[in-house]
Length: 251
Image 1: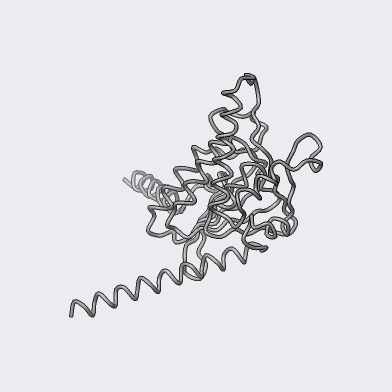
Image 2: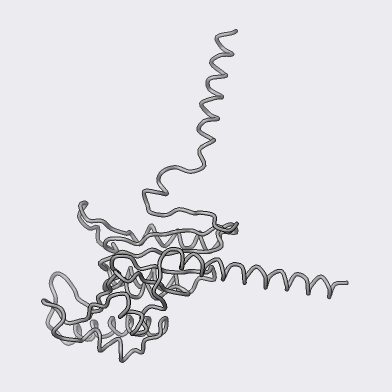
């Protein structure tokens, strides 16, 4: 009997130790974590490397998979605990449609969002950077704006050129609608010659990105978190006012 009791106690201790772990390390491996600041829970999501779309990239590539990011955004929007979302970007670009899909989701979220560009926010990283309520960039970061490119076999027919033009229009319209840069100005940056060795386009550092209206503000992590907390506090105050008004009306 004593041996059985000891075994049961050991099993209970093992089960208890497993239950005590609040979360697995997978959250850190996927680059997402929820932290509490000033009593508010803010979720941090990193978009790094290449945006992986319909095709799997080689294993040595650092990638962000859109099929991992999209469910996270839906869960964050539906969560009652998470009050803000911080997107940290350091990406070379990637799949255009996958990047636009993530950007469209971000732009339509009710949860307060902020983006912070570190290192680089190139190519399709530009729409991702401007998709949040407010965008920040550190002075040392850069953003490359260039036309849509396609790898692999491309048919030299008018339909292909039309497809490129429509895809480019989607990007230009999204950026113009979610930032302070006009569509014509953004196109001029895309088509600029003499700056990129093997391509047309423009490389903008942090100050240039803000000056051109592409990014809202120069700043770092503390600036982005302060913005989110201000929005959350304002949202809480408005909700409390509504509750007080409803309470008075009911009496």
